[in-house]
Image (tube, rainbow, N blue to C red; front, side):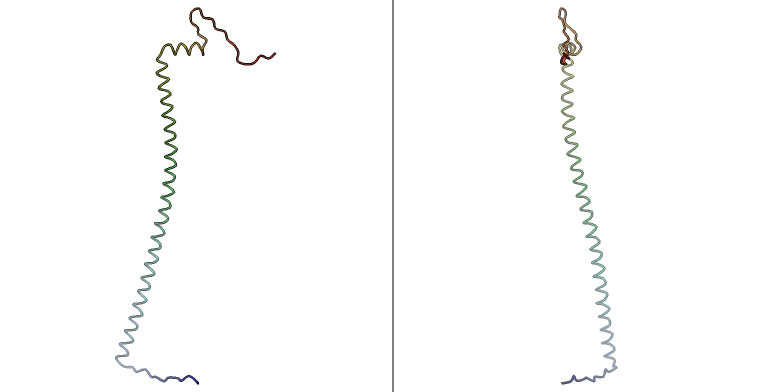
Length: 126
């Protein structure tokens, strides 16, 4: 069975012109809507992408600062221990007996009537 060709003639009436104009407006409206949606999607993607990059940069910076903070905390603990030792040494150096004891051991000073024998710490060569 062959297809029947419809011979429908289009009338050029005022109603058809208004209908064509209405259809054309609807097409343009739909086209503008699509353009706006695409533009909004692109803008949203750019904003989302830049916020994501910013977030990861801030995370990296935070991790770096945390590491630096830990190093400085360790250094501060070391310096506090050193300060404590130095204060203890200062208090000991204010004691005259301690200073005399250091002088006797390091510089071979002696008390009256005391003899000091210098014994070499290396082994004999024989």
